[in-house]
Length: 493
Figure 1 (cartoon, rainbow, N blue to C red):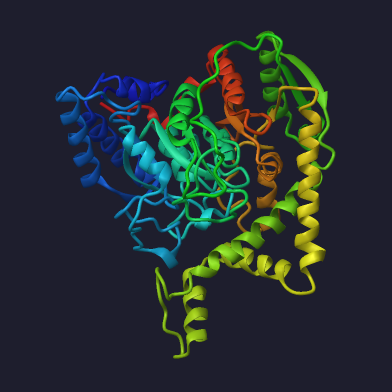
Figure 2: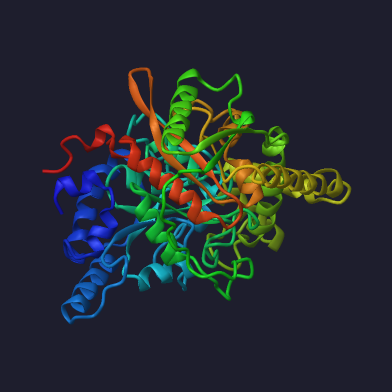
C-alpha cells in the first residue's frame, strides 16, 4: 500500500474491497504502520498478526478462484478490547481480564468476517469502557496523534487513534455515553453511534446494557455506511436488537432539511473558538439547503447526573460476574470464598471501576432505589420526551460534539466530576437511544497545537440513514476530514 493511500484514508475500505491491492498487502501495510506509531501512541493491547495474515491469504485465494468478494474484502480493521474474537485476548484494559481469550466470536464481528474484513488486533480503552480520556486503562493511556501530550478522548481511545494515525481505515468502539463520538471529535475523524439496538451487542463485554452500542470510526462517511450496513440487522441471540434489515445508505442532498440547533448545547461556558467552528459548520449546512431552527432540550442539565446513576447501577450488576471463579484473574485471599472474591476484585479493578461499582451498588440498595435509581429512570423519560418534541419540528439536531478540544493528559485525573462533564453533550443522546454522528468541522489552537473540533448530528430513533446522509453532505462540502495529524509526516517511505 502506498503512503498516499494510507494518509488519504477517505474511502480506503471501499478501494481495498474493490481489489486495488491484495488482502495480504493491506494487512502487511497495517502492521507496518502499527509498528511505526504504536510505541509512541500506545494504541493496541493485543495484535493478531498470525491470524490476520492467514485470513488475508485465504481471502486472496478465494478471489483468485473467482469467488465474489464481500463488501469489506481484505479491509484491515481494529476492534476495541471489550469485543470478542475467538482466541484473541479481550481484556477490557483491566488486570482482572488479562490473558482472557474468549471461546466465541461476537455477532457483529462474525458479520464483518463474513463480509471479508480482517481484524488485526484489540485496541486500548478506558477500563471496562469507563472514562473519557483513556487514562483509566490498566496498561497506560493512548495519546492523541495531534498532540501526544493530550488525550484522544475515551473510552474508545485506541480505536479512534488507530484510524486517525492511519493504521486501519475502520475501527470499532462501543459508545455508552459518548465513547465513540467524543474521541472521534478530539481525533479529527468520523464516528457514528447507531440507534440503540440497530447493531447486536452479543459478544460485547457489557458496561451499561441499556446504553452500550457497537459503533464504528472511519475517515469517510461512506466507510461508516459500509461497515454499519454489514453489522446491522436482527440477531436472535440479542433480545434488545431491533427486528429490522441491514441499514442501507440514503442518497440525496440537504435541500429542505430542517436542522434543529439546541440552545442548551451553546452555553456561555462553551469556549469561543469551539463555538465559532460549530456555528460556521451550521452555516455550511444552511448553504447546502438546510433550514436552521432554534430548539430547546429543557432537561439537558439533568443528563449527567441521570447517566451516572443509570450507568453505574447497570455496571455494578454487569461487573458482579468478575469474581475470580468463572474466568479472569484470581487472588486467593485469606482462604474463604468471600475473601477470594474481595481480594480478586481489589487487585483486578482500577480506581474508576471501583468508584462506579460502589456508586451503582449504593443507588440500587434497599432504601435508596426509589430515591436514586427510580428517579433517574423518570428523568431519562423526560429527556427522551424532549427529543421527541424537538423532532416534531425538525429532521435532525446539530451542535458541538464535545464542549472543548482535547485536554492534557493528567489535567483531570484527580477530578472525576470534571472528567464526567466531558460527555455533557453526548450523554443525552445515549440516554434517549438515538443515532448520532460526529464529523470533523474545524480546528482550534491551544498552546501552539492544532486540535480538531467535531460537529454532532443527531436523528430520531431509527433515522440512522438520515444522520449519515447529513454527515456525508457536510463531508463533501468541506476539507476537514482530509486533514492529517503531525504523526503522519514522514512516517512512511
